[in-house]
Length: 462
View 1: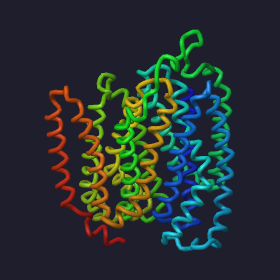
View 2: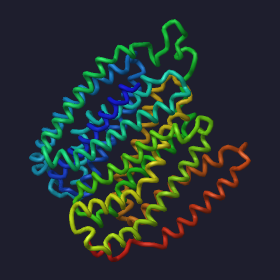
View 3: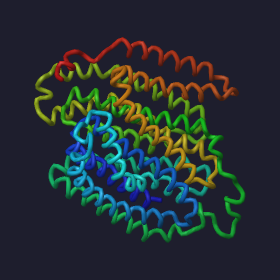
View 4: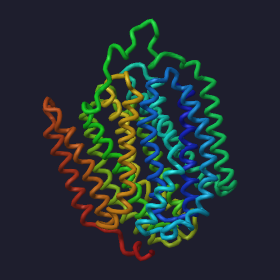
């Protein structure tokens, strides 16, 4: 397990390194706008969803999933090198295509989405398939599903945070985009070789069931998709809200810093840190007996509350920050200010999101048999929600109802499944008190959030 955690950490680092590099390259082709960024992120998330769903299901037939993972890492390294040169070719192709030059028209956006998807689909599918493969490779008992999912997700996410930070702030600046991409490729190839070398330790029948014992496949039936529909819906909503908020926060923070790629790096680094820390601390902060649907509902309720709480702090902090002109006089000071704003806006919600995925997966995957398929299904729906959320925030919610209303709507969305899970356990004598307390707290923050706006002194900087 430790060697796989280290491998998955570095795999996450290379994945987000690619995303930052690809956004940078697509920004040069399409223009460094939030619209272009959201299109690339959507294509990225779409590939992750497809890979999670179909590679996770295919992995059911694989005896040694670590060896399979090693081959995927090798393939990812080769394909990512091809993507790097493919984007450069696209930069020449895009401007000779119909509607290619108009980045804000519906046809221009569609052209970019389709071309981005075609280039990114296969490598991102491979990335999406890695989590369900490794979770099933190291899990042999039902009781370990949440913990193993949490640790693997946490290490991969913290690795992604490290990769995003290093590439966004260090590597591109000092060695350039080309060598940053080559370094990520070498990481993937090295991880593939290491995974193949250690795969013999995991050479067993599916789910590490000794061949002398009856296979779980014969004694247990996998959880039906319909039986866990409530968890699929809840994690789809959290996926939608997570990427929707990321784009909304990006719009809000563009009021503080004009360099989109550095801002994206700050935002994604902070978000990934919160997600990874949440996944890592979930087994410590939530004892096994409390890893149930009631706790899942409390986490979702906390998510809705903290989304509003972050927004309530934002106008005050941004106003104070920009009231001190010397503070943002240099790039470093402005970056520090932006990081502080990102932290207050996003850290608490994304920390709770880091709790929600492993708990939701563990509650859904009630039987170990078919685990990679089950993890693949629920992770795919979570990622599809993220894809839709990133596009909806940029193209529908913010243009139609504005940043504040879109953010408040996101908080309302997570409160619906939160109240459902809190109400569901009719044997709990305290459910009325919990519902009333959560409802009152949320209502109070809702009233405050609706009544405040981003200060005009900040808006005038645009």
